[in-house]
Structures are given as C-alpha cells and as structure tokens.
Image (cartoon, rainbow, N blue to C red; front, top):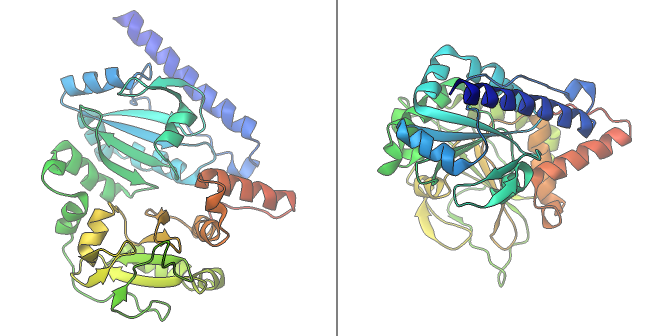
Length: 345
C-alpha cells in the first residue's frame, strides 16, 4: 500500500511539472506566466474516471473535476484563495475527490463510459469554454452541476453544501441559491440600453432577426451586479458593442412573462433555471436565428467581457467554436502589433 501511495504521489508531482513545462512552451509573456502549485490534497489519480467514481462512491463522496489552464488569472485566484481557505478545504476533503485537468494538456484519460481522450480532447468534448470550470459528478458519472469561471468562497460553500447534501435530487441549483438569498427586494440597476417589456424574442431561420441578442439576467441587492454596472457597463467599448445588439434584461427572481428566442412562453425565473445558469449577472448571447452562441455566466473583467462580445459580433464563433482558442489567437495578434495585453484587466 505504501508503495502505491508513493507511486501516486510521484505521478502527481510529475503531472504538476508537466503542466508548468507545457505553459512555458505556450510562450505567454512573463506577466501572464502564472504558475501555481496545486494543493497536495487533490486526488492522485491514474485518470481512469470510472475507478475514481467508484472509489468516491465507496466513501460517499462526489467527484469534482477542476478544468484549468496555465496563465489563467482566474484559476490563480481560485487556487490561491478558495483552495487555501481552511473551512472550504475541510468541506472539499470531507465530501469530494478533486481531480485536476489541464484544458490543453496531453495526459491520457478514460472517462466514465470507457472512452479514451487526451486532456485537451476531453475538454473539447465537454465543451469547456472558460477556466476555471468545475464539474460535479455523481456515482454514475452524471453531471449534477457545472460552474463556469471563478466563484467566490461564499458561493462555493453554498455549492458544496448543495452537492454533498444531494439537494440536486429534488431542487434546481438556481432555486437552492435563491432560497438562501435573504434580501430579494429592491430594483435592478437602471440603464437606458435595455429594451422595455413586453419581451417577445422569437426568431428563427425562416424569420431571422436583424441583430444579435444579448439577454441579461440580474437580481436586486446583488454585489456582483453592482460591480458590473459601476465598473464595466459605463465603459465606452461596452456601450459600443451592446449598441450593435438587441439588449434585454430580466430579474431572474421574477415571474415576468416573456417569449424566448425559440418561441417558448415562460417566465424570467423559469427561463433562468431552464438555461441552467449559475451566476448573476449572466449574459446569454443568441444569433439572429435564435441559437445560443455563448454565455457569460461567471465573474469576468473587462478584457474577457469585451472578447466575448467581439467573438459574437465579428462572427468568429462560426469558424472557431472554442472561445479559448479565439481569445488566445486574438491576444497573440495584438502582441504581434506591439499592443500590451492584460487579461486580468
């Protein structure tokens, strides 16, 4: 047993070195070469997820897969703050087996259905668009929740409680989080760019719209929504991009009636839940035919927000389905022109 443990520990150390070496090969500037050491309490694994799920089930745990990439400041923040918070780490170690996966890595793995992938192939198969992404699996390998982007320590506490108590069996994540919110009164941040109700958003290939659609979901007394409206919404670029789209907003807690781009009648609250959104403010972008292109469903700063908008408006999504590839190519092109890129801006 001791030999097995030592072998796994060695493999894990080799994995960390490989990730750092891979990042250096990517040629990111020194300011973005954010190399961090993953916590030693992450599970040492042979990357056979069927075995990992079986071992987790024996201890009544869930598996949490952490998708990351080198040079990602949001990943650095998650590791430095969340994964070093004493109480949060205690919950993770008690109820979860945490497995890391490099979005661009070359390690071989086998998923819970026996399919073989490299890390980057698996990330593409799982449609990972942002890092960090956290994927929570039950004993059968079913995805019970997916969180895109950095999550605050408080939000992660609530998330871990939701998963470990198996509330997902009878309650949606959105409903669970909304029930924890104490102050649901108040108004949303005002802004003239949002179209007035009623919102009849139906569009199709036979009846396409003239503009892309940006749907905002917010809620009252929302610190993250306030940050968005004070720091990001007033920016000239933000306004220029949004003015090229049809822009609507909903209170994700409300029963406001609407018609979705697919012509379904619903309410704001029910639509937010059916989209399986996990963050506020969230922005979901639809093409002129009513198909979702991409969503901003996490904490992002200026550079990523504007990159998502240009990804939509330029039509780049039609040629490059992977947003991370798009933003990497965009950043490299700017650097070649001598323009400094600060992805944490």
